[in-house]
Image (cartoon, rainbow, N blue to C red; front, side, top):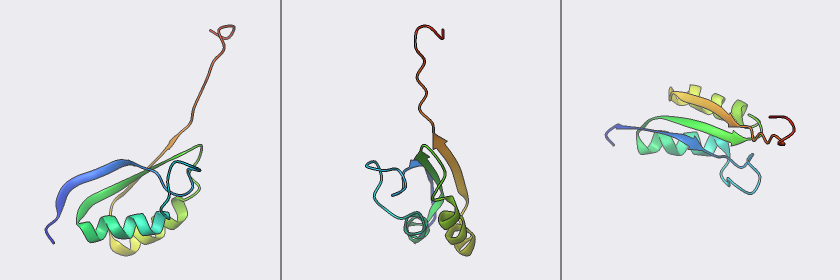
Length: 79
């Protein structure tokens, strides 16, 4: 399969409770099988699936971009 010049930067794994369903290593494996140029994992509230994604990405030589969504709320008193 030809390489696709596309990188999903906001993929959520099963470590984003109630937001993602796939295991990080399976997501990386599927991105490689689809010929994507890389994968960006951006879980909510942490990087708990990073180790599994990193091991698989290294095995497949697939670039892995890592992020985390950290919700912040400020009360009007703090502004």
